[in-house]
Length: 160
Ligand code: 4NP
Image 1 (cartoon, rainbow, N blue to C red):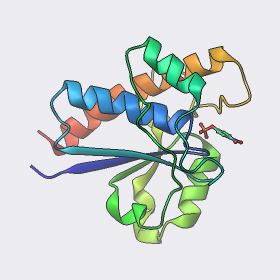
Image 2 (cartoon, rainbow, N blue to C red; image 1 turned 90 degrees about the vertical axis):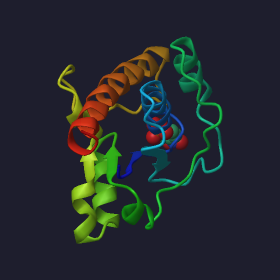
Image 3 (tube, rainbow, N blue to C red; image 1 turned 135 degrees about the vertical axis):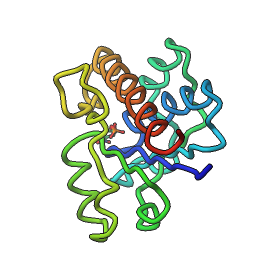
Image 4 (cartoon, protein in one colour; image 1 turned 120 degrees about the vertical axis):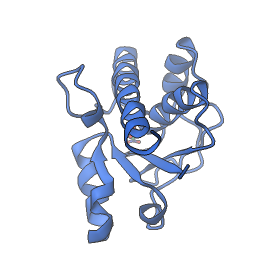
């Protein structure tokens, strides 16, 4: 069975993409697929490199049974475009920044994460950083739904 690798990308890599990383990781582990699906997350900006996720993201995730304290922020690297099969942007700005960094032959790997769910009207996971707790709950709901869709897609496309 060939491996599949997924990189979640937002701006700071402390709120949205680590939430996606941790939620998707738990789903993959629960289905016994952690040996075949590699997961990481990164930010397009370097402001928070080396930091653990935002405490509000960790709190929201912990209340729903997801642990993310082990994650540390890093910046997207040119090598990521060679390593990862799926490079999933949280919003349009992340998406366009990734496309600018990518070589033409890697651009197909860059997608909008919410393309993997039809459950919500949004096409972007909104930046919750300057908002209140409800924004973090909404991020979690969007991420959970798109993670389910992504996992089904990967199973159908690569693992069946
Ligand atoms: P994220 O959220 O991109 O979901 O990690 C943000 C984190 C930090 C900042 C902006 C967004 N910031 O401006 O520092």
